[in-house]
Length: 268
Image (cartoon, rainbow, N blue to C red; front, side, top):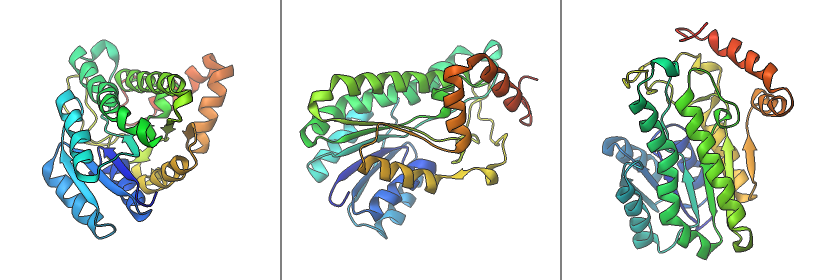
């Protein structure tokens, strides 16, 4: 990754920030994008202690023009693009019957359309460098999770989009990686939207028992170097994906039972 130019959306916290740190340590020129200027500036200052070639861009990936600007500022500053990591994302929690449609739309706008907008603007530059597109998905993109309809839908959509893009560009040597972490300590559950669209402000899970964002970032870093197609993390995650292929009805019941035990679960 030395000398490569990397864009990471949602790069000021969680998995995005951890990826920025890991790629910077690998010698990459890092661009982080996010909605909050103060958080971006803090992350940029930390990154500069590792690598001087850092650029931060205040942008909302749900806005097409912002996504265009992320790519344009990167090319103006570094002259090329080698890796785009579509990491920006939000979650939700609530039964669909009680969830406002605007909540579904908001999650799709960030998780799916944000990936589409950024990838559309980045693709011509990545084709020139035979670069990589990384989608940070989730086990929820492999198995629909009850109480998280919008989140699962957005990740399924992201995976379908990226898989098709990979196939379209088989002869162009474009690398597409779909990374699926399991439950990770990243803060995404604290900011997850409730059925009415208000942030739930607390995690329903024990964050200390989860995989760290740094571990996820290290695995994404290595998978990008090795140009892997798919990355499914945690033993439980691999088991869920494998068993769901052959025993989907049984996995429905197992997943339902597991998630129903969360504190404040919207279903029992």
